[in-house]
Image 1 (tube, rainbow, N blue to C red):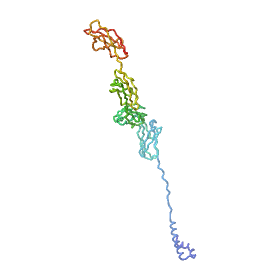
Image 2 (image 1 turned 45 degrees about the vertical axis):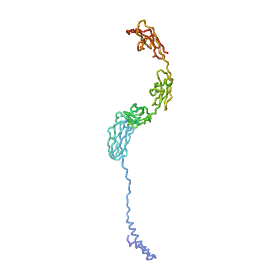
Image 3 (image 1 turned 90 degrees about the vertical axis):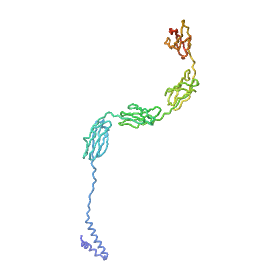
Image 4 (image 1 turned 90 degrees about the horizontal axis):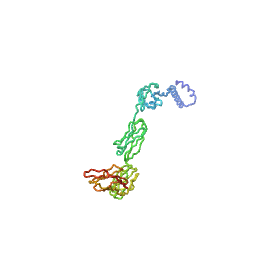
Amino acid sequence: MRLEQNENRFGHIRSHNVSSRARHAFLAALLFAPTALLWGCSGIVSGQSTQPSPAPQTYSISGTISPVAGGSGATVTLSGAASATTTANSSGNYTFSSLANGTYTVAPSHTGYTFSPSSLNVAVSGANVTTGLNFTATATANPTYSISGTVSPTVGGSGATLTLSGAATSTTIADSAGNYTFSGLANGGYAVTPTHTGYTFSPTSQSATVNGANVTGINFTAATNPTFSISGTISPVAGGSGATVTLTGAAGASTIANSTGNYTFVGLANGTYTVTPSNGGYSFAPVNQSVTINAANASAVNFTATPQLAHSAALSWTASTTTVSGYNVYRGTVNGGPYTLMNSSLVTGLSYMDTAVQSGTSYYYVTTALDSNNVESLNSNQVTAVIP
């Protein structure tokens, strides 16, 4: 566009009655307007539409572990350009997906099995890899494991007996620090139970399941067992003093009653016991007593001693018709002998008192005569003495 053209174009405006000042202002505005229009006409609009970048392509790696026994449940590890693990399905098949191009290593593992090959390298390059990534599993010799723990404190753990039951049975002794181990164990369920005289344990027993690994930390705490006593008196003093008192049952022991007939057994665990007194020349009522300890001392387990009646067998015989130095007395407990010599020296008289007899027993006696040359005669006729 040219200015002259603009002036001609607006010549019609000058025919109006417009003041000179206003006309100049208006023309000035018109002169600038074409300039602005020229610039507007010369502007060029340009641009470029932006499309989103496509997602990178990914691929997969897959294979099979056989036979099924070793493949099913096997763990497969991927390393290299990316890391991952997966578990083979019940048929031994496995897959790693969403993998970028790159070099990877695949390695299987399964408790109780070895694999051939142990691992495989694979390169992903624009396609899934579905061949050449298979493994063969071989069962190893039956693996064995251990169960171990500690019994504390040491005073209760050292020397404690640990008993294993369940899938296998065994016993072992805790070492001086209270540590113990059961080894050579197959997979399975077990129970461990500690024992030690004078101690109780918390817990009393523990379960342990061996499943392809050693089991540790099967621990116990030992506590000293409380102990109790049994005591009593044997009267009167004549029969109680020096009497022997015997303990049987949950534990065995013996003690001597003191000069007043008192006796005591200490350090006893809970349980049932029998107490029996004895003293030569005395019988006791009761003959014995049963006592049960249940977290408390047992006292007043008393007895009464009664002197036994003295028994004897009085023997006499007719003098020999020949001159003799003396006589021997023989006794037996079986009719007709054998007989045992009773006198320690020759009896020079015609009688003998046997005081070493027991109530309720029958004895059989014979005598012999010895001459001056100590030649002994045949046995006399046998006599019988029944002791009431």
